[in-house]
Length: 469
Image 1 (tube, rainbow, N blue to C red):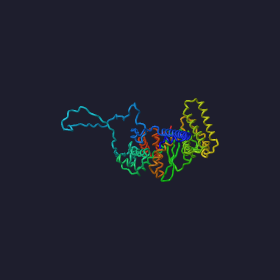
Image 2: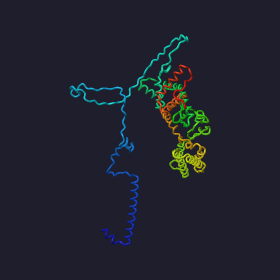
Image 3: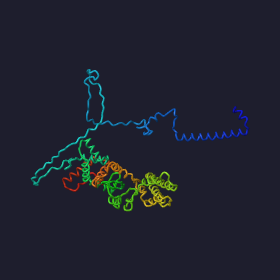
Image 4: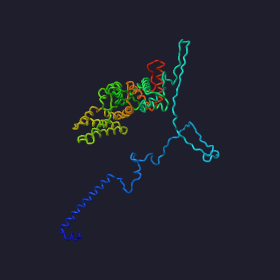
């Protein structure tokens, strides 16, 4: 039966109700369709139709960032600089045509190609002959002194020893890889035990230089201290770092307590001590301190988690705003008058005291507010001392090479090895901080102290590398 006749047979009111119902359903479906389209557009704003794929995007590896490499368009290019010294010239000529073996005229043109290569190192074996004489005035035998580059009674030269120090304490290579480098690149046969013993003897002669570094740290205006885990023959110890922007001193100790920094810096120390919140730096050390605000922010972030409770976010926002305002105030020190700056510093410290003495229901903020109250005089010291950082990143960056060595080796087997580690890493990192050549200075200092010890029979010679101001 035709649908039209069916509709005509229906009652008018029933048809009107059905039409209205269909209109409502159509309106609801249209609204739902619009919402889905907006949601899809928001998730994929740059999605292209399937019939026009992005060839460049499809061909780019997923691991590469979306930007292009190299300098921006229009900037001058950067290429490897051409060497100014030519050590060897090789002329390639032809006596006949390589195709038909026919004679050739005189050369008309030539193209140049310059390459840089490494000359394989070789071991230089030196025999030192020291002559003895009879002195007719003193009536005794006298012997010529050691040569300038001679290590008395040593089988390895100063450059070899300095290279071992560089490979182990800067490039973080274990003894077996140092052995391989010396053998494969230089042709020098040396055992891993000889490398370890040579470094320990070297540290004994250079201890006076590391003592000068410690003296410089003691009188420095700013010093950063941090510690990390270390092992001696599998037994847990601690590696301590005392550093600033020009000096670095390291030592390994069994204790993580206050006796280590107190013994090295003194109970009443000079300058400002920048540390984390470890108890070893607190009550037993008297002087100006700056606590690391990065450690505080990091702990807050860890305690916050992915789903913090309602009573956590309020104090968190308040403290983060206070720390950001203090850092911004330190950055604007040169743009404010001394009077205005001092007034704002007092206001920041008052806000910090108010935050520490407030009442909190959250257990984390009860604990952190107590800590802030205890260290309130050490959190904003960077506002009182121009140029003082508010973090302890200097010490953490200085410890990072030791962490790499720790992950690639068994740390130390004996206390003598741990002592050598502290002395030689102090020298290497201090020379790097001062932008001075490591190999040259290590070899020079060792020759100086070794020859003085052999000739004068004295316990130590004066330092030659470091003299604290």
